[in-house]
Length: 250
Image (cartoon, rainbow, N blue to C red; front, side, top):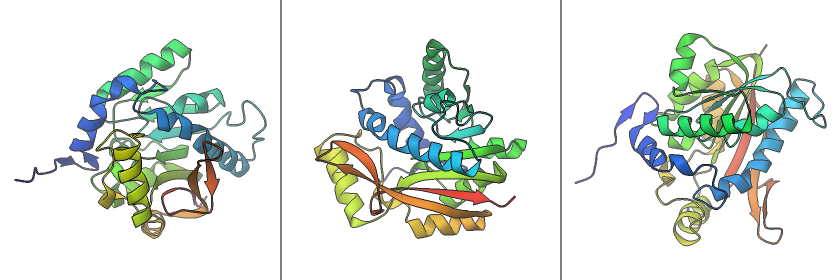
């Protein structure tokens, strides 16, 4: 008999349980999140460059995001929060997994970084009325129970004139072969069961959800793994991994 999926708002309880089991391994560069560590420089540079241009910052400066308040929704162990804090941003990281937030707090504390980590959800923050210059939803929308509700709540957290970044996975045959069969089952780059292909989001679906929530896409890019260079890089190919940045009107 098929197990019924438990959900609360946008939270998928099965996904929460999966990530809770891996909470202590976020910062192991050879552990289950090794691929995320290798992918991180690409998404960090994309966020830095797009945000710096939008808010008239110099991306070459070490504090190029100084003065910006950034929210990372589904922050995990803080792999993205920490370098953003080092770029000068005031970072709030939220995640529904208590064990993950504890791991993130411990690592940031050991690194001497003041990051505001909270075990909460986008819905709870939206209800409180908080707003941010930049809201990040990186590799999270494919794990939520209600995609459209999540986008609506996350968009509400973007202040007028602010930006929202989304990194996710396209629902194509190519992504199934590369990311489910290849990355999870053959190469073991990602822990098995991390993704469900039917929850991947197409760029058109994402654009519609963002526009309904008052945001307009200003840039989009694919991300591919270059076997010869042995690294991830930006690409025009959005068939598997892709990122978008959307703006809320001032």
